[in-house]
Length: 253
Image (cartoon, rainbow, N blue to C red; front, side, top):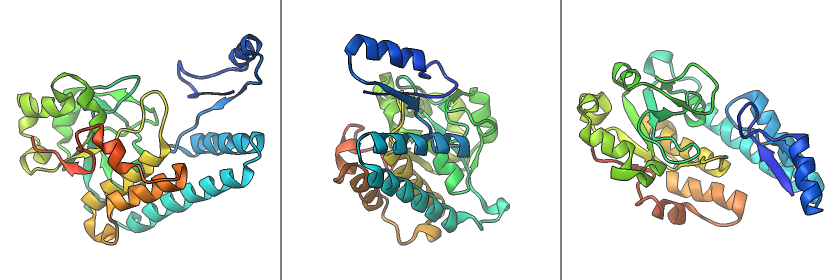
């Protein structure tokens, strides 16, 4: 049994918990931090987890294959956008981010990896925390050029963040709303993270913000390339169907 948790949170795992589970089940339990792609330290945790699973399952080559692929993919995103001058980097916000359930517009990620990799200016940036609720004033005052919505939000009443953008007068004056720059991205976390979707979302975000830098990329095809690398087959259409096909699409508000 592999038992994971997120470092520094209530969901972190421990040796004591692993021992308890092993004693109750009689099955060997290996516990480790889940890691993330947000910081170098958490990326190191993730790669250590891959290598530990690979060693345990005699799949060490597969672990190294996935690590190399993640590094190549994020390097490609960086390469495409790293030379964009600061005054030409787009201002952005991601709302409706899932975290232990679906949430509304104020739910966000200050260190949202797709924004980091494509050098966009996140108006909610400031910490490396995985999840945060910001005030509506942060969104209104930040007035991002582009709004991205985690389409997991539609599991809430009135489509969550999407409904808020349509009905809350505070958001009607946002530049992104007025100009039609509101887009859906696939959810990738609930309690823990689907790293395939993190990478796939980044290419869609890059394509929307800097189309000339991603002229050779079809985000849906790229997503299926990524899913195939991780799980052995295309998955974009099946995943997106769970969210009214709002992922990788313009959201009318």
